[in-house]
Structures are given as structure tokens and as C-alpha cells.
Amino acid sequence: MKFLNLIILFAAIIFQTSCDNKRVYETNIDFKENKWFEDTLCTYSFEIEDISIPYNVMYIVRNSLNYQFYNLYVTYYLFDISKKQISSELHEMQLMDSKTGAPFGSGMGEIFTNRVFALQKIKFPKKGKYTFKVKQYMRKSPLEEILSFGIRVEKAE
Image 1: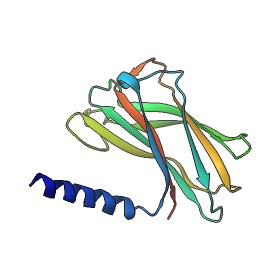
Image 2: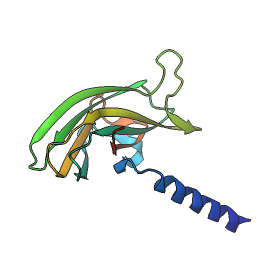
Image 3: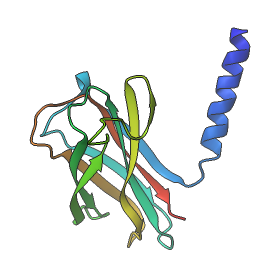
Image 4: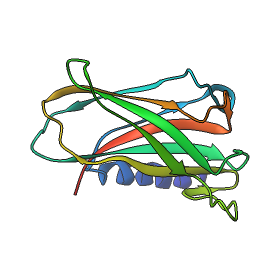
């Protein structure tokens, strides 16, 4: 029976990854002891091969229900292939309902994951390697109960 469950799990993973043809890049950075320090800059590098189509960049935030705020402020910095900063902005994400405290996103138990657009339908000017950096801007360090922070770059529809 355990072998059958293992086969089903493996098949589900293969099915899920093979159906995700929009994804260009996706990775998460786990924080030691679930603490995101103010001076910790999350850095992601990805390749853009097709400049004729638009892309979405999404934040992926994993937090516990013990996170003490209902929102999260971050600042992103986007660098082009020559390492020149081409974009930067402060974003606010709502992780929980401010009145009820109910978590947004998907999850079970104590851990929830939110996917929030950082950039929508952006066209990259040149082929090559881009760098996306993010830092928390909550004026609290360390920011506790943020388990990981990541980005996803996908082909826009």
C-alpha cells in the first residue's frame, strides 16, 4: 500500500510540473528560524529568452498564523542584463483580513502561502539574465513568522 501511495505521489508531481508551461522561473528562499532580517536582500536571477511576449512576476510569501501583522511591505529592485537598475517600487501585500484575522492564500493548519503580482505584463527589452532583489520594509527586524519568500516569472496570458 505504501508503494502505491508513493507511485501516486510521484505521478501527481510529474503531472503538476508538466502542466506548468507558463513558468519561466520559480524559487523560494527559506529564512533561518523563520526570521526575515531588514538587511537580508533576497536575490533571484532568471533568463529571458523571448522578448516578444509579456511576463508576470509574482511574489510567493509563506507565513505562519503567528505572523503579527496582516500585511507585508517589500521593496523590489529589478536589474537588466548589464546590471543596471531599471525598476524599483514599494509594494504592500495583504496576508490576512485586517478585521477578522482570517488568512488569505492557500494552506492548511498554521502555514499559508500567498501569491501576489509584483509586475504584470512586463516586456523585457533584451534577451539575457535579469536580477530581481527584494527586501522587507516593515521597519521591524527581524520580521518573525515569515518562513520563506520567493518569486515566480511566468509568461503572461
